[in-house]
Image 1 (cartoon, rainbow, N blue to C red):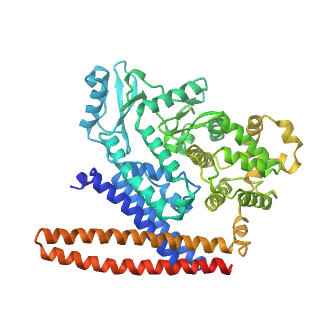
Image 2: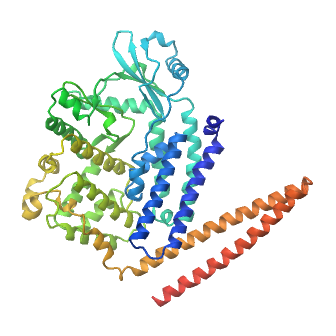
Image 3: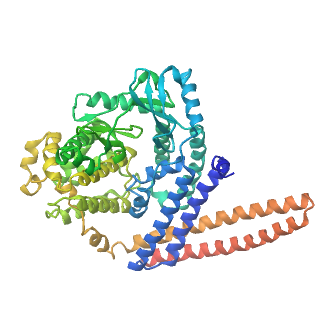
Length: 553
């Protein structure tokens, strides 16, 4: 029965939409109950967000499908998702029970148009990996070569497209009833999400990405990309060479096989910085399970279902962005951010310029000279605060890029904690920038470390946000008023819906000669009409008080 419900579109839609509505109501009530944000309030807020994220993760792992992929997508959105929520979603495991063996065989034979034995000598019944979209099996071709076969789950496309309907409802609720919906470009977010999900469903697209990386790095002896059996790959089945090896973070494996950890770290660093700096596609899901270390020290990169792209224009604008920071020209910085589609249409660019400039000024004192994993983590958190506070929204590719960069940095430090990332990065960035003479003409403080102006944000950011409280007092009042306004609207709509439902129940009871049903309907109708009037009156009073505050200020 539970399995039947899991695939029922009405059940899935109800779970997804109700969870979103419940989270919104919890947040509104929290704001109403807490007027003063002291340390205890912040601690309670973090606990509430953590509980909500945990509930989401549990439901996602139970239902699978788009909830898992949505959670992974949201974990990349440091521009608007709270850090504590992201940390919980980082633990969201794309792991579900494997599909029935018979379904896997049926899909293969349907896609190949022939019996499996036509192309395979052997096929292991137990999946080596199971995820929400597909399972991976080990098999052997007729010529004796071992292959990994990735098979898409039965009905998964149908489930995803049903979930898209629920997500559309959630995005509508966010747009109408929340201040976030007014700030963010939810239409763009929804389109990005649907594009990413549909791309992951299409194994032919993944094949194209895999072949792209194979050709790009086939001459690099230290990096191995699996070769695909093109003639056996379809929209629902991928066949690639089987690659042995341990997770890249398995330091004990490296010790056992006498693999130089520093050299391995440098190789991995060079491989990914090439993708992150230069135009072309980049591997957007570089977690430890997708990066393997072989006995001879070769690094194998797997799974190209999630891939981003850096265009030539992106590189050009990013170079201008770096230049703007170096020479303290924040008009160039804002122009580049705007052309890269970071800044939302409703942004106050003068305020944004001031925030960026004052923040950089406070951190351009050389406080980032010793960069390690903790500093990088702190930096990521501080930049997230800026993006959430200001009208900035990351395009999907940049969100995936930042996520990929943070994951790779974490892996690098896990393999070789003594790594000097500045020593490796600065020459690469200078070569990439292509304007060495310009860099050398800048003041010595900035020329010593090209990345210092950009990476000099941390610690005092909080004091900056807390300072100038008086100047921003009305902004906070207005934000609180907007939250109340949206909350009253939500209650009014829900009450009105209950009134309509109660009228329907009453009519149904009278027409069907079910007097108890009609009486219940009339009672519910009366209760919610009274409740609707109370909410409406309270809403009007709140609006009058807000207008009075505007006049007084």
